Length: 95
Picture 1 (spheres, rainbow, N blue to C red):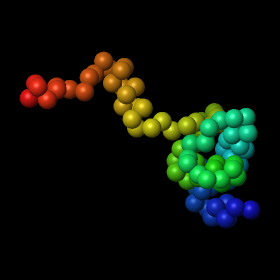
Picture 2 (picture 1 turned 45 degrees about the horizontal axis):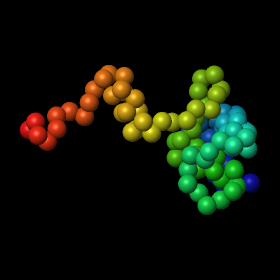
Picture 3 (picture 1 turned 90 degrees about the vertical axis):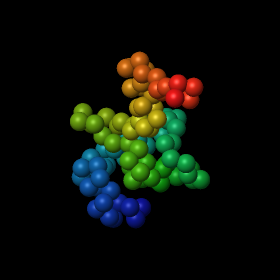
């Protein structure tokens, strides 16, 4: 058994032990089917990878019980700029 599961912190992070079990199970299935890990680790132990993803807030369960990936800030900023049609502001020559 992984020591992280003995601590209540990981269960509180996802909303309880039942949600933790669901999240771990669904993420393990995704990794077994070829999904890429969201953390850089030098291990093939999928459980360690899932625990690291949870503890670093990379994945969570949405309200319908589906595993969701937290988007990088840079991806979110790029998407917002594309949506709003914003550019990076004035260039150095404009100052």
